[in-house]
Image 1 (spheres, each protein chain N blue to C red):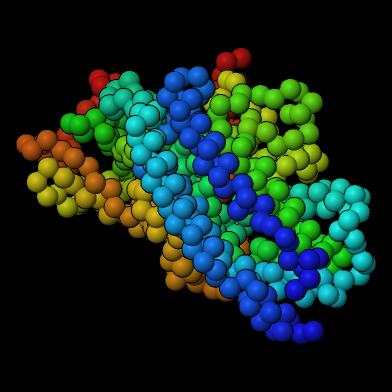
Image 2 (spheres, chains in turn purple, cyan; image 1 turned 90 degrees about the vertical axis):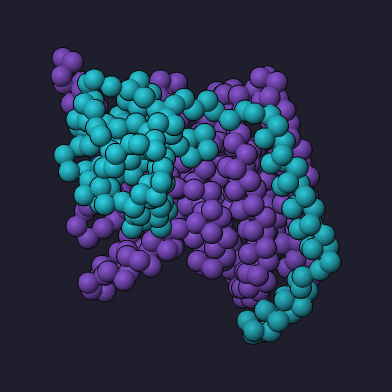
Length: 308
Length: 150
């Protein structure tokens, strides 16, 4: 296997010691009250165990993902050299754009939400939350979204390295210790402030700020929402989990989807239970993010009218 | 080269190595250390006992459409049940946060009581069982107080 096909190093593996040290630092500085950091031991254990489980689950699907990427690249349209600076600039933007759509899909369609929801199921927002990763992301096919990059001609090694860079970047933004970065950086980059909004369950903040590294995609595609000082983020999912059981953390949405499929009355309902937005139900008795936001907006408007 | 050939060669080059197992072992040890550190630090968010004052913002956030008229608080302050029409609004502490669910009042009333505990079964894979703690002599279904007289 050539150096263009397999990266010489794994960015995420190399970063793991730094992840551990930064979590230690956040806890110690939080204990000393030098930064804002809240940790609950069982929540922390669940987040970190999900991260470890994700590594193990990922090992089972990594070869398939790599093989598919390499196979597509061997049928590429252009030859893009790994040594060209412009190729790295191009893949930086294109991979980040791909990540935006992957992430948006992972929130707006239940089949992918079922794999991603565990990352949002903590009621905390700290560096351990960043490591609360999926166990089922490899089997839902979301990795197919990166194959067009290989088809265009980006070597698989470049794609895997850039995916790793994006994941490592996203680690440090899972913190309440950093309030705001300088305005120009807040305008361009995904920052702790923007990503706190993404993890919040307030109706105003639901399904917003899907960015990986660059927040420009949210600004461009209309999903950007700034963090407001008068509305603190409440973290977690719309209906928070009832315990810290890891199996429940990893699989509860898949279990709920299977139960719903058992009640589907026709193929259309079954398809909507799988590929509809999270919270969809045939009789509208459950709430999607759009419904929750619309109700919240109606309440806000009603209060404003009453005040007048 | 066919996809199958690529897959076979990839699996051969990526097979689980001793290095991967060492990495997993190191990660498991790190998790233990970090969890112990987080317990030592005692920096969980303050979670006051549920009462008339602390429950109000929770109900407003979690059940903004509901208009509960009466409420019951568990003796340990870890849970509360409000009644809004025929619906029971359940609030219970998990770690240093709260979890909420709405369920028909009739279902709540039928929940099984064992000693000082009541187990409420829900058709919800995210929270299939809610356990509330009662005073030994407390009634179930709970005796409600008007919301305004909390």
